[in-house]
Each structure stands twice: as structure tokens, then as C-alpha cells.
Amino acid sequence: MAHREQDDFQLYFSRVRPVYHQLFNLAHAITGNCEQAEYCLQYAMLDCWASGDASASRHGFREGLRSGIVRTALRIAADEQAEFDWDGLATAEGETDPLLAQISQESTELRRALALRYGCGLSPRRIAKLMHVDASRVQLLLKRCEARVRRGHAAGRGESPLVRAVRGWMSLPSPQAPEMGSVFRGFQADAAAIARPNRLPARIARGLIACVLALLCIAAFWFAAVLMQPAAMDARPEAAVESAENSR
Image 1 (cartoon, rainbow, N blue to C red):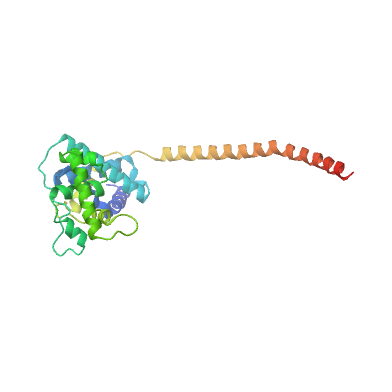
Image 2 (image 1 turned 120 degrees about the horizontal axis):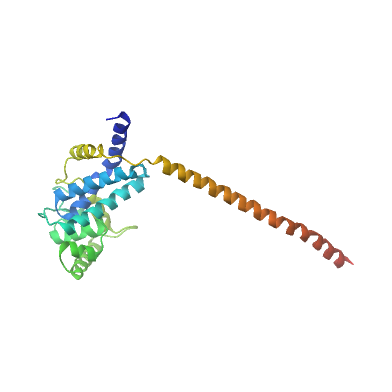
């Protein structure tokens, strides 16, 4: 493997590593199965690498991976039925967050609805389809939980304590998540066989288009200035004549 490609892999891993657990938890909550979640993670990473999106800004890169995970997980959940092994939002012993400790005592059904709604950003209708229940039941579960949280936990500025707690949990390591190194090694083996698109011609074309547009804008401003100049010069003699007449 070329040294430059190896450096690209290392840079890519360094960008994925901070959101690795969040991405796995997203996929696991949607599919309900850890093996399917691992597949979603591998697929989204490979798709992002092959499309060249790894060079995007940090926010754009993470949002692209997140969107890819959600799309792939929703497709797999709709096409395949696997053993349900999700047990998220069940806090570990000694949990210091009182709200997470409270949520962990709720039913698996409610905990998954919370994860899908506030962690994955899915609508109640989509959640109902994934969980094979009525949308009205999902809405009722969420409203009752929100009411209980409001009674027991003061809301500060920004997002609600419930949303903050669920999103915080989504970034925590899951005991069901595969070892990060093995996932990266599998990804690297697959990615090495993929010919990545050459982005240089596209970047050159965008640069040329930007230069042409800039020149057109400069020409338009210059042309407008030329058109306005005679009008300003003609206005001055007229103003002088009018001033002279008024002075008589």
C-alpha cells in the first residue's frame, strides 16, 4: 500500500474515531440488532470514503456519516428481520446522572422510542413503523415521559433535559459495539480495493467558474459606473442654472 494512501487512512480514522460510538448507537437503535448495526457502520464509512466526502469540513463530514448511517439502517430494518438485541439507555451501575438513572427504569419500548426520537431524530410515524406499533401509542409514550421529566427536573436554557440526556447517552461506548480496531481493519481492507474518484478536475473547474463569475461581476460594476457618470455630469450644469435663476 502506498505511503500516501496509508496516511489518508490514518487521517480518516482520526476523523471517525470521535463519533464512532454515536454512529454505532444510531444504527443499533434503528435496526435493533448489533450485527446489522456493524454492517451499517462499515457501509457508511466505505461510502463516505469512496465518494470523497472525507475531505469535507468536520461538521459536514460528521453529518454526512450520520445521514448515511440513518439511511442504511432504515433500509436494512425495512428489508431484513433479525434477532432484537438492543438494550440501550439502560445505565451502568453507579450512574451519576439522575435523569439517565430514571430513564433506565422505563420499559425497553419507551427507551427505544426515546433513542429513536431524540437520539436519531426520527418522526413518531417512522418510529411506529420500526417498532410495529401505532403512531398514537408512540406519541402517548413520549408525552407521558416528557411530562414526568418536567415534573422532576428543572428545564434550563436550550434543549430540554430529556433531549440532552438521550443525546449524551448516544455518544457513550456501548458494551455491544464491536471493537473499533477490528472495524477499521475491515474497512481498510475493503477501501483499499476501491478506486476513489479524482477530485482535482472538479476542483479546477470550480475554480475557473469562480474566476469567470468574479470577472463578470467586476465588468458589470464598471459598466454601471460608466452609465451613471454622464447623468451626474449633466445634473451639475442644470443645478448651476437653477441656482443662478433663483439668485436674480
